[in-house]
Length: 261
Image 1: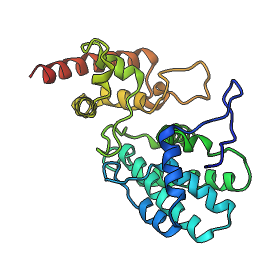
Image 2 (image 1 turned 30 degrees about the vertical axis):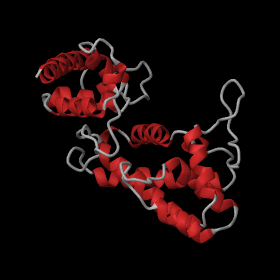
Image 3 (image 1 turned 120 degrees about the horizontal axis):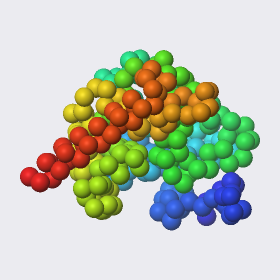
C-alpha cells in the first residue's frame, strides 16, 4: 500500500490521491525497478500503457527515501523531460521571444522544488501526486509572474495535441455562450482545438490579451507590485477590457460559423 500523503486541506483532512493513481501505484510496486523504469519512458499521453506523471513523482520520492540513487536519477530525467514537453506546448518558440530560456528557467525552478522536497520539506510535492498537470500549470504561472513582463513579447496560444489546452474560465464562458453552457461540449478535445484555432485567427492586439488571460494574469490591480495585463501591454485597463470584449465577440462568431457547418 502506497504511503499516505502528508499535507492537509483547509478542513484538516489529508490530501488523498485519486483512486486511479492509487491503482497505478499498487500495480507498479509489484514489478521490479528496471521494468518500472522502462514503463516510465513513455511521453505521449495517448500511448498505450502511459504511466501518469503523478506516479513518477511518487516513485521519485520513494527512490530518494530508500537511497536508490540510480533509480532516482533516471526517474528525475524522465520527469524533467515531461515537464519540458508540457512547457513547450504553452511556451512556444514560435510565439514567445526567448522561449527556450524561459522554459529552462522554469525547469530549473522545478528541479529546486524537488530538491527542497528531498531535503525534508514534508509534503512539498504532495499535490503533484494528486493532480500533476494542475500543479505544474500553477507553478508555471507563478514562475512567469516572477520572471517579469520583459520576457512576454508574445503569448503562447496553441497547445500540443497530447497535452490539450488549458482554457481559463473567462474564455470558456465566452465560448459557452452559444453552446448554452454545455460542459460536455467544452470538455470535448475537438472543440478545445477549434477554440485554439479561433484564437489564432484573432488580430494581434486581441490575441495578446486572450493569451495573457490564458496565463491567469489579471487585467488590472490596485497593488502596483502585481504584474497585470495592463502593465505588460503598457495600456490602461479600459483598453484591455475593450480588446478582451472584442476578442470574445469574434470568438463566438468564428465558433458559431464553424459549428453551424
